[in-house]
Image 1 (tube, one colour):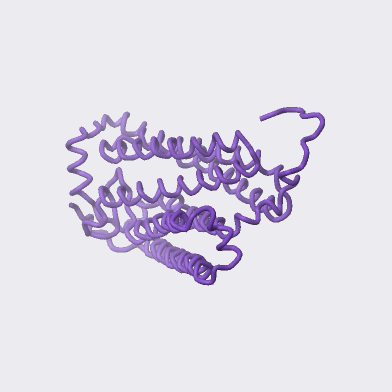
Image 2 (image 1 turned 45 degrees about the vertical axis):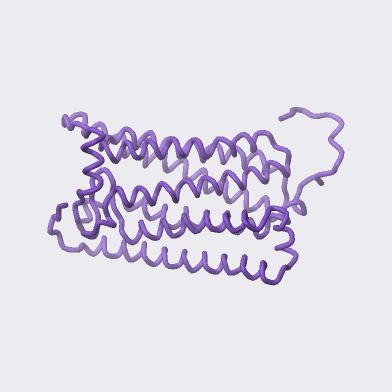
Length: 304
């Protein structure tokens, strides 16, 4: 372990305070949401009966998927770290890369499962093969991205980070395609929510393509020019388990602030929204642009 001895810069302190405040708010929102599930189960209301065919254990699992992401992100926000650089804010084993990356892996897989399940349910309702196929592709893409992430943090090879984030961009670019296909199937509030999600996804993909991935590519090119060698797997595994550099210097964190701030706020809000979908999903048929049992049009321009 190493400590650079830098005092807390005002910018880093404010940023960390922001992360803590947002994470605390996210936990409160999750607890309120979980309370809604418990209240409906206790009262046996119409919404809970609508959930019942899906199975109470699966509803519990659905809430746990969201919990894993909300609390996983809160943990990472409280103890920020940059994996390849091995920098962190606090000198504790909880800040080591192996701990933080393990928490992140579980949380991100749960997040991908949330998206896949929601897409699958809407695809089933609308009989959309496009959305159904994309729902099946999301989790494998994210699993591959997680493998790239682990390779990057173990070997300190930024090219793997660039590939990881490219896969995230592809996965959610496909989700955007699915939502665009589903947009015509609904009207009113549901269409508005989907359109809002599409705008968010477009902004995310643009950020990854223009900011995040180029950042990692530039770091990789700098390492190549400087002749920096990647670590072996064994040496890297030991390094991620033992080495960290505590720094409060804004210069060391500047490039991490943008993506971390968005990740621990907007991304968590989307996970909470996906969880809330389970409470209102039974109302989707009421917002269909064309009733599910309507006769098909005499002439179909294109079939899925």
